[in-house]
Image 1 (cartoon, rainbow over the protein chains, first blue to last red):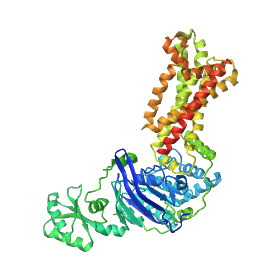
Image 2 (image 1 turned 180 degrees about the vertical axis):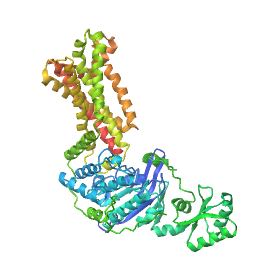
Image 3 (image 1 turned 45 degrees about the vertical axis):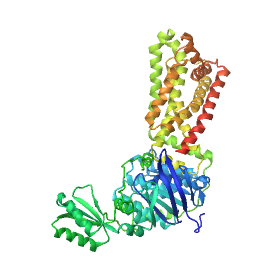
Image 4 (image 1 turned 90 degrees about the horizontal axis):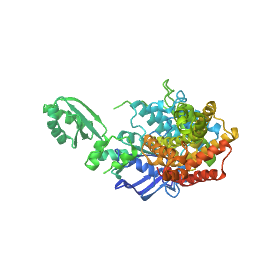
Length: 330
Length: 286
């Protein structure tokens, strides 16, 4: 049992190289028990590699990590006995039914046959999967698969859960369901290490966040500290006429600060401390004859966080494969 | 920005089956952690998984049943007259040979199945469990042996229907099949190693057949090596597949030589001792 005095995860100087590239290049983490710790970064930043080292799937090349007081290399078996992993690819067997997946894991974790069946029934009901329980997982929707994945991670209650991008690719409704489930798990005292590409997700769920880029932690703190360092929000503007964008860029830069040109040739966004600043900036646009089609005030995107922290945008290769994208860094 | 429904824990489950958060909290508050499964129990659980996969997609067994039927019919009627003078005479020679060939070809599927697992996320979960390292690899052997035995039984039944009469009777046939299955277990570790080294299930399949085809044809499975050029004959004589085919014929005809059987068992054991640790290491390393 990890006492409150101990950290649930304590990593120092973790390094993992793939060939010439350092996917993880000196990561330190300190996660307190009973909290959600967010690891935020784009694809290829080293998030998945970090999780895989902490979950004992790969060995670090340098550095040390203790999970629940156990060294991930020399006491890997003890770590495995008290954590669970929900991988980026859904970590369930697509060729079995939802119920069979849960019974399989229950049996492997040492439950007796009848106990494993009872636990499967309980979890399927709790996660809203009892109607689909006899269906092969390959026929599940993305949201159902994620819920089953999380259910599979708590067949035997873990002290610590690794959640790797639990909502990537989900529709908003399924995403909200996953968030609600994560909150329920935390309310019962589970420690969670959450990897995500979405600032909003880390903000919603995590008590502390480490921003990771090119295998290094480039910022660490509570969500509000992090947002304060990048501006609390951003103003997105879409113009009637794309030709007016340079003019709009100049005006917004003057009124607000850092401006990001978006992929849409008529759109741009600027970091923005609050509603008053936004109102002022919009009236400047209007008085200079720049016509605005629509605008919105939102949280900074990961791109804006990265721009503010590193001076370069997050390069996010859209690549589904974990091993390849981890090799991409640098 | 999307609308976030407020999460009231007592919200009734909607008809489209949302998670019941109160039940989720109850489910995770169960803190009792059982003792980890024993190695035997883990292996049997993975065997159960292999059987479920056959149960859900029984069509996959067609591969291991139709191909041998084709081989038996084709070789007997196409080559029988030319090679042995009559189809009946050739059937006596070729049937144990095709038994060997068909079951050995099935071993490639062990590697294909393992590689298919790797392309999905489920292996990460298995590797993060506190279970015996070799259990995920030994468990599927039960599913594999179902395929081996099925392929063997199909061939023998068809042979008997075509007029094949093994001298040693049922006992000899069962012994021959058992020997082939044991050898296949040994050989399958070569393909599980390949399965962990190659990128796609298709590549494993191609590499497997590319290795097995020449090895099978350069054996005494199809023809008596006495007619071959001397260097080729020398190779065929030491090819373990030849020795296995000779031993299987011997067991079915009641003329088995203990030395052949010992060689077959030794090769199977040797392959297992070399490739099982390699497979286990590669699987753990991920």
